[in-house]
View 1 (tube, chains in turn orange, blue):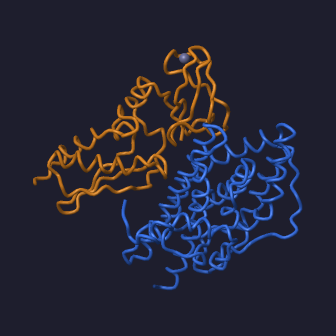
View 2: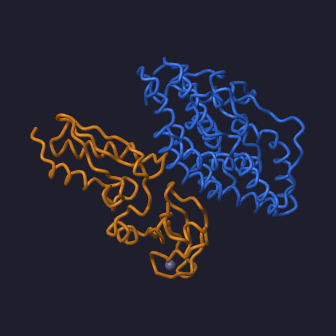
View 3: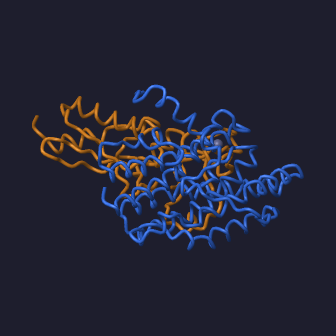
Length: 162
Length: 253
Ligand SMILES: [Zn+2]
C-alpha cells in the first residue's frame, strides 16, 4: 500500500464521535495527527475525559475508516499531552453542537469567569432564552451537565467547560 | 527489576488502587442512587476514577515491562498487595456516608493532584494535569452536597453528622507517608503528602463549617491500607471485582 499522507489525513478527519455523531474527531479537537513507523500508521488521540468509554469506540471507528481507505497497519495511541480542553473544539464544532441541541461551552478555560467559578448563563439551544437553570452537574455523559430552559421548558445538555 | 524502578511501580500502584477502589464502590450505586440525577452523578464520578486508575495501571504495566497489562493489577492481586487508603474501601452506607467519604477523598485528591502536576516524572505530571480537571469538579460536587445536607433539614443534618463521626478516623491516613512514599528515590517524583495536609484540612474545615457540621475528635485514627493492612471491607470488594477472573482465568469480553 502506498502511503499518501494527505489521503490519510483526510480519512482521519472525517471519523465521527460515537456519542455526538455530528462532530468529527477533528471538530472535537481530540485528533492529534499521526506518525509513521515504517508502513505502520500511528494515529494519536487525546481523550476528552480520562474514563471516557467512547475512546474504545473511537479507536475502532478510526481503524475501520482506515481499513476502508485501504490502510490495514494502523495503531491508535492515546496520548495525554496536550491535555484536551473544550477550548480545542473548533468553531465549526461549536456551531454543530448547538444545532444538534447541545449547548456549547460558554467560556474558555482561560477566562476569568471559569477560574472564579461564578455561576454562568447558558443560553437554551432551542429558543436562545437566557432564563435557564442547571438541574445536575452531571448529564448523560461525563462531558455534559443537565440544564432546563425556564421559558420553553425543554431540558437540554450543556457541554461543560473543561 | 531494578530497585528504584520497583519503588516507582509500587508508588504508581498505590495511587491507582485509591482511584480503583473508590470507583468500584461508587459503581455499586449504579441503578441504586437516591434520585436519577444523583445516580448519574455518582456513576460519572466512578467512571472518572476508574479512568484514572486505568491510566495509572497502564503506566505500571509499562514500568514492569514483562507483558502484563493494566488488567492484571485490579483482577489478579490479592488483598495484601493492595495499597489504597482505608477510607475508599468503606461501604456506601446511606447517601450521607457516600457524600462524606467522597468529600474527604476529594479534599485529599484535589491537593494531591495539584502537587503531582509538578512531578519530575513526566508521565505522572501528565496524568495529574488531566485528572485534576475531573477532581476539581468532584470536589465542587461533594462540597455542595455537604453544605446542602449538613445545613439542610434536621434529619439530613443528623445523618451527615453521623456519617462524619463514622468516617473522620479514616481522613488523615492519606497524609501520613507510607514506607514507599518515604523512599529517597521518589524525591521530586512522589507528592510529599504531609505538605498537602494543611491545605486539605483547611478546605475540609471551611466546608464543614458552612455545612454547620461539627468535626468530631478522633480518638483512634485508622491507618494501614497504604502498607497493605486493610479492613475486612476490601475482601468483599475484591470478591466481587475479581470473581470472573478467578473463576474463569483470562476470560475475555
Ligand atoms: Zn428554551
